[in-house]
Image 1 (cartoon, rainbow, N blue to C red):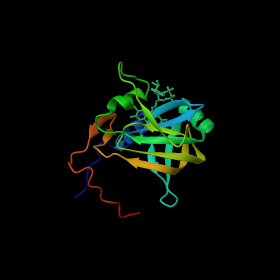
Image 2: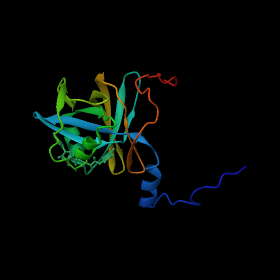
Image 3: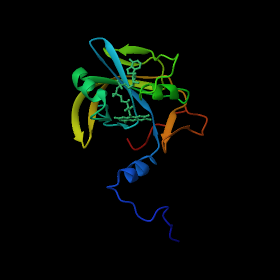
Image 4: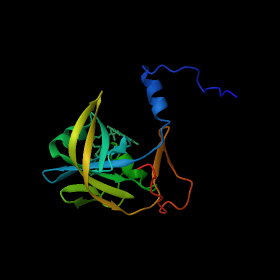
Length: 177
Ligand code: FAD
């Protein structure tokens, strides 16, 4: 039995097509943080992934026009906090839409800030960068991690969502690593 595609053909050179297709990839949401001369900066990012297991590394893709790209190059380190389903306001805050009356708070892992409360967070030294078109991949070597647990905030088709299963803190370690 053959399956009929939703759309017959898509032009990968069309920016709208690219955005539409990529938005079908469901992700969690992170806030990437750093500090320069004691001043803390954050940015919402869903282009995050685990990098290497040994040594533990992670990767985040930052647009070259985002202020965070220059900030990370200056600071040389970053924190990543995974948002919980009740933290949509933090995603909005760090994407340029602050919510009146709500102020994010941070704590410091060594010299690297992370959000004070989140599902899990980590701090990483920037090991290398790789140019990726109009973005830069910041590859970090993780030196601290913490886990508070809770239900993740998801992002798909430009909408926020959450997972349907209940036992989110019953972690089954991935067998492929
Ligand atoms: P700024 O504009 O300086 O900061 C961003 C916002 O964070 C501002 O509103 C600022 O007031 C606030 N902020 C910064 N520091 C603090 C602080 N210490 N306390 C309180 N508020 C603070 N872009 C990417 O490049 N890569 C991605 O993977 C990515 N994923 C995204 C996923 C989602 C769901 C969304 C909504 C956006 C995503 N973006 C991504 C876009 C990115 O978050 C925005 O373009 C962002 O505004 C860029 O910020 P900036 O680095 O230019 O810094």
